[in-house]
Length: 138
Image 1 (tube, rainbow, N blue to C red):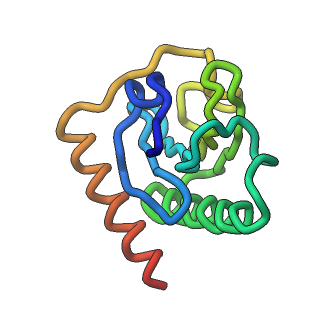
Image 2: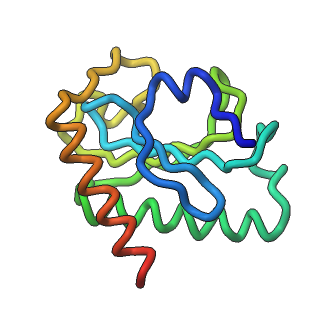
C-alpha cells in the first residue's frame, strides 16, 4: 500500500489520483503549486521509474502543467524535483507570475507559507479537480 511522506501529508491537500501519481496542492496561497508523487513506495529519484512509468510520469506532468496553465494562466511554469528535505520522489509544478512575492527568484526558502483560507482552498480544489477531469477526457 502506498505511503505518503509525513511532511508532504502535512503541507499539502489531496487533489486527485492519476494512473501513476497522486496530485497534491501545496497549502501555500502565494503560489498555485501542485506536487506529483508517484504512488510507488521507496522511490527517491526519477531514474528509478521503469520505462513505462517514465512515459506515464511525463504524460501526467504534461497534464498537470496544462491544468495549471488553464486554471491560473501564469507567466511561467516551474517544474522541479528537489528532494533535499523530503526524500520521497515528488515533483513540484509551480505557476509563477511576475507579481508573485518571490519573482524572479526560486520560491524555496524565501518566505514562510501562507495557508489558504477555507473558502479559497475549496474554490481552488474545485477548479483543479474539474480541470483535471476535463483534460483527462480529451
